[in-house]
Image (cartoon, rainbow, N blue to C red; front, side, top):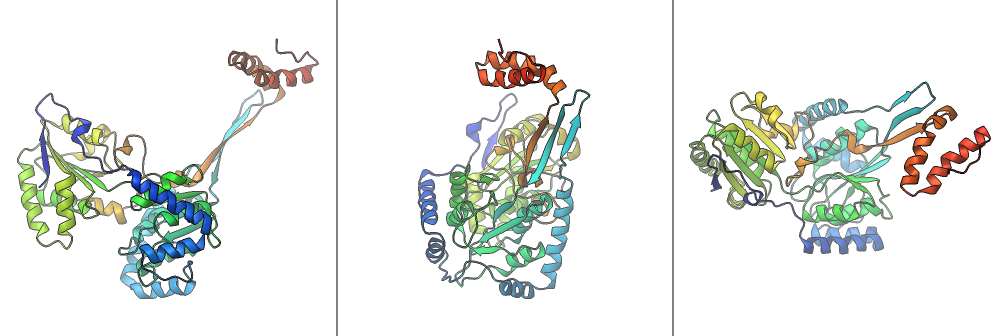
Length: 436
């Protein structure tokens, strides 16, 4: 069911052994660019036309009304509202610990330095929709922005064929106080957020996961606005030894594979007997899964089992793959935490399925994919602020540092940089402003 690689002692996993499905196809980029150009030219009319073409929805208004939000809250039921409130509380508590403050310092010469932390003024969050609903994505994108102090948050979400937004998605928005919500999906929604339309004011940054066209559009608008990341298909890597429960491993592989046929699943184990036990568990669990077709295709196309001679090799494999989600089902998983260098989110022990991270644990589920955990991390409060350096010099400080500035500027051939200091010192002390 999953491709197997057995690493003999001394052999290392190569990058070529690892399937990567996160690249953006050139044809998809081309389509996204045409859609962006159309939205820039026609605004609302283009969004309405694309809703008819892609979502089969006939829209007369793009903005979700207050009545629609109220009706959604009434429709979803108390059990869901209680669950979403509990999740929102945990997510907010976690992200409040990420808040960084402005800081300033001064020395005896009169040098005043610091860093000013400023929330972004306006951001846009993309929430997938249409045939599915992702209320958890509302929370994961909106709450860090709210905690950061963002003034305005615009949410875009594809409508269904009836022109409605899934009530669970709207109820999640209501839970965190979002009221500026638009019925728009795909590359066209990203374009609307980036450049604005007659109805939608442009934003400073766009966050949130989406399909290949959404990701392509984010890549194309990057630089005109900020983006969080270019997320690809979901991934999980499970580090397991002889203590792992095969059924737990199997169901957690399935939990990622059910997202998308392109989702990548990895089992990295030091127990040569475990893969067969996991495959037996997979067959049993798949027999009752409503998403068995998608899961089976994902496991067959992008599933890899790596059998390792020892824990050190298994950890090397995990760090090479740098997965979005890394589950550790080994004896004493906490002892291995220090050796894990590359992972978007780490789940320790048999009672910590990735599902809790998706919904209620508190950390963000918008995570780096396709190996980008080597250099990036989850969506956080930091994504919704910007940091400005603050510098103030007294005359005494400028006199103290001036010669150093002039020497370096002259070495770089930047005469005006050097003279900017020299002229000030000349004016203060009645000296010649010639830097020579």
